[in-house]
Image (cartoon, rainbow, N blue to C red; front, side, top):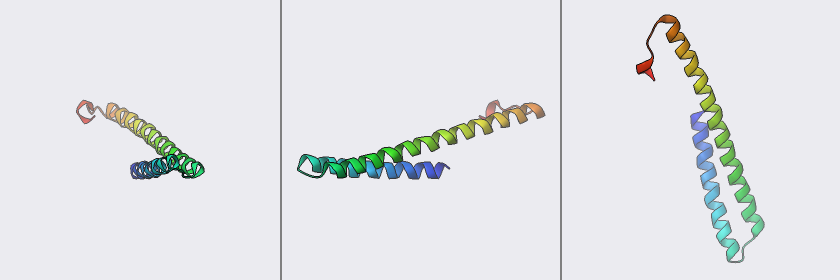
Length: 82
């Protein structure tokens, strides 16, 4: 899941660079609609990357809670394992 989040972040960054270039093109007489399409794509890709990062964090937190519970159950100290 981490690789997927990183991939989405890289894609959103690439889309952001293209949207920036299209925005500069708008200043010089380019199509504003093309700029908006690329900017919307960058926004959605960044939002998806954030969503997957948050989901991954929640999963990691849940796994860490389960690990701590198992350590406590078996009397294993987990202070140095964090």
